[in-house]
Image 1: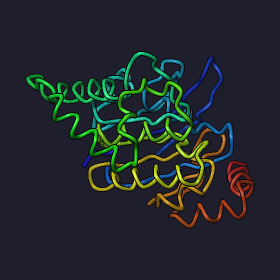
Image 2 (image 1 turned 180 degrees about the vertical axis):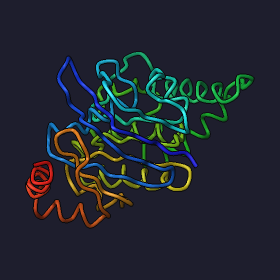
Image 3 (image 1 turned 45 degrees about the horizontal axis):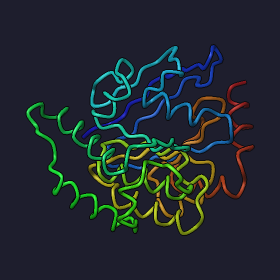
Length: 257
């Protein structure tokens, strides 16, 4: 079984410390939610795990399948089976959704087997239509330029479609619920739930409990000041929804003192 192991991770941006000793293990097959107020480092953790060059690791280690993730480039991490769904997906004019996904899938396949000749166009078309039907996406979506002119909900569905096609072992969802209306949230959540299970672990980053009404986590973690200071089961998210984060901060500061 694959697992993402984060040990005493410290990260800075332009010399400013953001993460201050994060410890977390996300096994394949489990859903872990990270919650916390704005500015606590949740998205920094996501971008660090996928290898964004603006985030400087100043201490600690991250391993995946026993390999040091931190010495690998972003594309190498992706080919290993790590996936990031962005909070704000970027547009790629001139590249259709279908071409982007087929190229990404072939890259993943060739990494696993250098002799792999890639998925044929008919086979890929069948796979893509199957995934799009499940996510209730118009087939014309495949011919549009990636995220160009997409609504917020369409961008998030495109991210989940990528996840459905690539089938990563660990998926990091950075505030996937941001900007979604209730119908789009439900559809995106159904996609996540369909893919979770023994073959994929999920690290779900969110401010609010509402997405956790649809995607039930196995564990909930609270991040304050760049470190995880509280962990529990799904009930912890409900408690946070009712009482906010201040009690966690007070508990953390009392312990630190």
